[in-house]
Amino acid sequence: MDPVLSSEVLAKLRQPRPYPAVSLVMPTHRRGPDNAQDPVRLRNLLAEAERRLGDDPDVPRERRLDILDQLSRATAEVDLTHAEDGLVVYAAQGEHQVWSLPRSVPERVVLSDTFLTRNLVAARAAAQPYWAVAVAADRVSLWSGDPQRATEATRGGFPLTRGLEPQDVEREERVGDVPSLFRDEDTRQFLREAHEKLRVLLAAEPRPLYVLGSAAALGAVQELGPLAPDTVTVEHGGLADGPAAAVHAAVEPSRAARAAAAVTALSAELDAARGRREFAGGIDEVWRAAKEGRARLVAVEEDYRTVVREEGDHLQPAEAGDAGARDDMVDEIVERALDTGAEVRFVPGGTLDGQGRIAAVLRY
Image 1 (cartoon, rainbow, N blue to C red):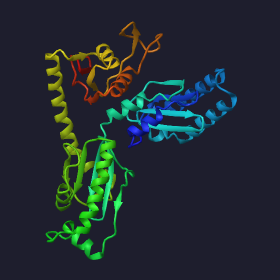
Image 2 (image 1 turned 30 degrees about the vertical axis):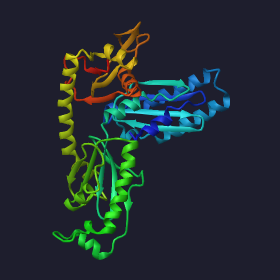
Image 3 (image 1 turned 45 degrees about the vertical axis):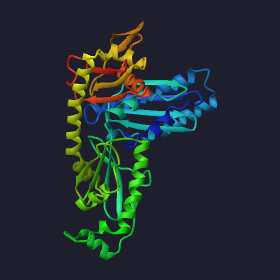
Image 4 (image 1 turned 90 degrees about the horizontal axis):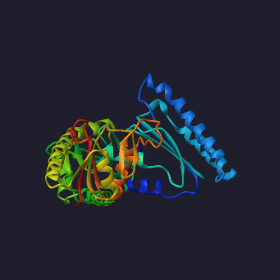
């Protein structure tokens, strides 16, 4: 998945398009022998999309040819050799996009006036993304990370760089140098600029934040004021230029500790909600709460998927392929909950034993 699948990007994807906006969604496989089926499944989905475009009387010929060309271009960009767990291809008049997701998705072809985004929304929430900022006296770099990887993000004015004189580089590298280069006013002004850019980014796209740098760099940044609640500092210099694997490795112990603490706090919050009768457990109860906007917080086990069908105001278990069967209801609940302002947290499998693998704290 694009490491910076931002709220702004999602909003643009969900805007109405001239009919049809075509969404192809399919599970993929990271390794053999299962990944041998991926090219065949993709060809079959493309053939299904072409057939449905050709059979639809509401699709003018010129638009159909344009969209087929966009699908062809999108397919050429698909890299199944380095596939993750899901693939989403979008094509509409004059545009196409390809997204690789670290979360399995159901196979489908959808023609509508908007792209099918629920799988992207759920994958983004499940990825538990964070921001990391690596600070040096001449460069401040921004990294978008998740439990699997970190990637440098070139947005919001980052990376921020400036030139240093040779003697300044030597001062930064020396140990015990007093006064430190980080006490220099030019350096402090450089860090103020980075600090302000980061505040703007966090306001637009809030995520947990990790600040990496030497002790002197971290001290200089902290003096500029708070950036975000629960910002974690990691004393590890020399990462402003990466590499990405080293940034990820430096952040991972702090991220894992924070995630474990969050699961403990979540379990206590769900128990308290049950005592207040502000609790929903199981996919049927949580679906209704999310649909009605009553869910304040939704917790989902990371690997939870199920097939259901709607019967009146309830969901009933179903088999894949049954008439009316829905195999992405979990993703739909996540999208609906986020749309109504709820918080969504993905937790390790087994965390919600006895609660139907999905649970919610209700507003009322």
